[in-house]
Amino acid sequence: MGAIAQPELYKPYGHAPYGYSSIKSVYSGPDSIRVQDQLDLLRGRWEEWGPKEFMFNMCWIQPKPPEKGQRRFYPTPTEKWNRPLVPFLLNTIQTDIEEHLGLRNIFLKPRQGGYTTYMIIRRLFLQCILNPGHNGLMMAQNSKKVTDYFRILKRCLRWFGALDPLDKSKNTFADELKQHLLHTAYSNRRELVFDAIDTVIHCESAEVEESAQGYTDMHVVCTEVARWEGNPEATLSNMKAAIPPGGTLDYESTADGWGGYFFEECMRARDKQNPNREFTYHFHEWWWHEEYYDEPGVPEDSLTKEEHKLIMTYNLTTKQIAWRRRTKIDFRQDFDEKYPEDDISCFLLSGQNYFDKDILRARRTELQGRKPLEEYDKLIVYKKERPHHNYIIGADVASGLDVSEGSNDLDWSAAIVIDEETGELVARYRAHIIPEYYAWDLADLGRRYNNALIAVERNEDGGAVILTLEAACMYGNLYKHIDWLRKDRKRRQKKGMAQDQFRMRELLGFPTNKLNRPLALNRLRHFWSESPHLIYDIGFVDECLTFVRDQDKQGRPSAAPGTHDDMVMAGGIAYFVRAVRLGYLVPEALPPREKYGDIPAEFQPDLPESEES
Image 1 (cartoon, rainbow, N blue to C red):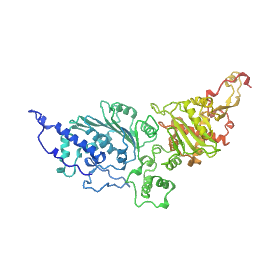
Image 2: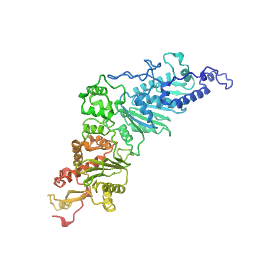
Image 3: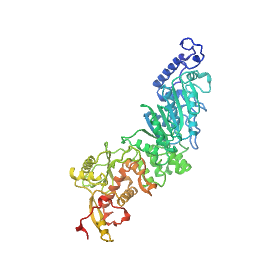
Image 4: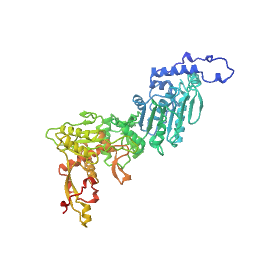
């Protein structure tokens, strides 16, 4: 990885003869032949060296001062190294990003990961100067950040191609680049204009919704999107409309509480099964940083159970655990947000989770790297069926609704298969599929697991699934829910009968109403607290982590905006039915009082006169 040599091509020589002219400006501006030669040279070096070595040889950055407890990492002894500026050598996070870049990327980042510097240099500056006519845009959360980031951009331009920033005599090549290829018509606090290659790089604030209008930008970087004020979705929609086909778009931000545009985009992008994903998803835990460790480390006999799991799962050291302990004391409840250990809990605020967050996080850590027994597009199997065992399938049917307003991300049809005796989760199903086809898949799944008892949510399209299972699939082992039915309330009111009367009835499927829904969720929460080691699906764990109490609906638990709760509801149904089968819960013993919730109209048919008593 050597430094770029001063080629013979760039020794001083006269301007190309274009014909005689008495205007001095003809000879003082960029020379078009030199511009093309310099561009060809840089492109050749880019192809020969690759992005990582190119940036090391051509770009200089100012290292950030270490935070409290952070140790500066010197990547390699080199004659280029000096205190005010250092060569841009990619750290481990930036190297991993480089290996997995797409045209559109979203980055959920920890602090001090070098994301912004990487984006400015790699995704804006270099893309624009190597591709004449490509404009670049950097959008920051406010005007102060715009000024800070533009300073990084100008520093990159000032020292681009320099051999030694402290010795001007060695920087002939860098000076000639700025005279020709990188000649700037003008440069202010928000915009660089390279007149020789017809390229503009400008920085704008997200405080103004229309700030990105009026430009055609081929390369766009948006920083700290989670902290944008106003309506970030509208701002970004204006900007996206100006990106031509083949352009690049990158969002990066630290977490800032659950909900909001950035949170929803992260949840959509991290779901590899989602056909509506727009972005390539990037996430790095705090231990990707080489700097985060404390000497001499903690004694091994002092490790907590949680710390021991982290060491065993992620191959951490006691020095990293020492840094973690001290930083947790410094940041307290903000540690998970600033230095995330998983990409779910870093968004969530304390007290909002419906399920126990500590249990879920611990189980999620245990499941990292665990491979299922069988994995298909729609079905994941963790345990095979066992002879003479009874199984229960809880099935939630997709309603066809968006997970958030204005989103194209629809809910899923999901099923959870559990062992009736132990409650062990043995398989899970998840797909975008029409109700009739979903019924056939459920029938196949039920027959595989010893003719399992299938409990289908009967609301909305659930009726079509139940009918197909019963009539077309000829599947006989369907759950029948026993419930109370108010007897002909309207007729009794006309006759002046104030006393309500009820009768028992059986319904095929599970009615998710105001009475049964909280009972089902409580059965699932109880199982999580008692036997988390019997749940093996990390996707199911993630849905439980994003299942929160909605403050706008008086604490009603539901999926956070932009996330799903299909597997949560399927699991709740399965564990409710298990409790009924084992005799822990007797639905007909529940008092038929209206305060527990209204019975849906579809379950309140008018009774014939002969049944009135």
